[in-house]
Length: 42
Image 1 (spheres, rainbow, N blue to C red):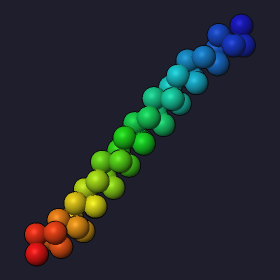
Image 2 (cartoon, rainbow, N blue to C red; image 1 turned 180 degrees about the vertical axis):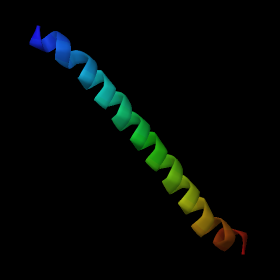
Image 3 (cartoon, helix red, strand yellow; image 1 turned 90 degrees about the horizontal axis):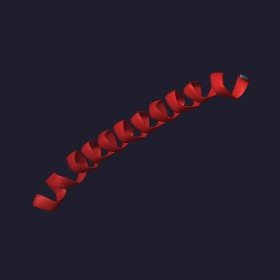
């Protein structure tokens, strides 16, 4: 019974972590582009 109640929480935490990681990757790629795209264009 305890495991059954914990499983949804774990899956929700997994989704939150994955969404945060994907969001952080997007932000870092945007910062990387903004920092290095003008330098490469020059």
